[in-house]
Image (cartoon, rainbow, N blue to C red):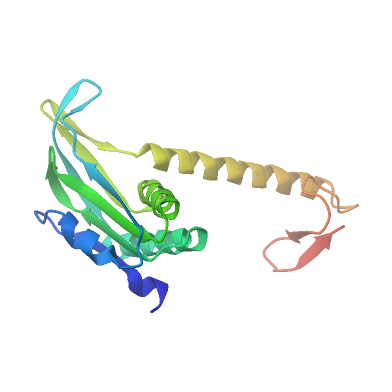
Length: 196
């Protein structure tokens, strides 16, 4: 069976609670010495404000593709048997689960590490948006993981821009900040050359 055939990914429409037993049963197997789970639930307060519920929206086809990609990344890093991921859309009242992950493996370290990776990756890169509804208003929230990833990407783009500028200023001898044998795109014509 192909790895992706052992992944169950579901984006649940409004008012469909997460059935944790379903996902745990999905990843269960006689060979599995470990099943790690994560249940993200709505808490009743945030920064001193009383939370009534969370509301989730998503671009479902892309969310599913992004979660599948995260599962493939997890499989490339850890020896995993099965993965199940469920995320609710719509209102999620206090105390209820909005996201659930179950991962099985032969040994616990693989399952635990992959489970943590998956929730962090989902919060950082999957197009699912969260609104916190308080007794005195509501606000769309960006996950800390998303903000960290965005900051890393922006820093990488700035570093690439600086490197490109340095290479352009050093074109006569072909040396730049990135060292030897760097591919340089000289513009729209598609010609590339190697810097020495």
